[in-house]
Each structure stands twice: as C-alpha cells, then as structure tokens.
Length: 92
Image (tube, rainbow, N blue to C red; front, side, top):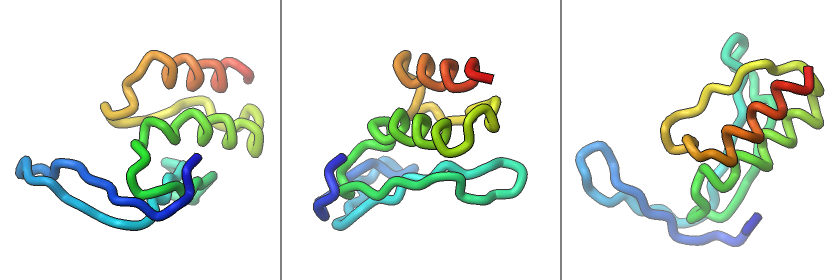
C-alpha cells in the first residue's frame, strides 16, 4: 500500500470536486460497539475499495471466526471484494 502523502479527489453530494492532501485512514468498525477492529493508513489518493481486501484479511487474522457479516457501501461492490468477504465468513 502506498504510504506517501498525496492528493486525493472525489465528487461530493453536490457534484463538486473535493480535494485533500495527505493520508487516508481506512477503518473496520464493529456495528454493535463501534470499536475499531482494524485500521490501515495509506496515501490520500488510494481508493477505499483498494484497501478493502487487505483490511478484510487483517481482521480475519486478528479475530479468526469472530465476524460473520460484512456491511459495505456501494463503492465496495466488486466481485473480488465479495468473494474475499464471503471466504472470511465461511471460515467459521
């Protein structure tokens, strides 16, 4: 994962570009307690979907068989992320 500060850009809800420079923190948060189960810091321009698989695998390694369901927004709706998420759940 890239870890150098960098420019990021995305469209906000008004359709206007939002810019930032620096880093992004990608988090896995439990739905019940809102505790952070895992985190990953990357360059500010890395897409959230690119961090999903490393985070899913990290959570499964840290808490094997503990999490049974993954809730993600539409930005993560990619076949590979779905397969990895299902594989982690199937290890129970």
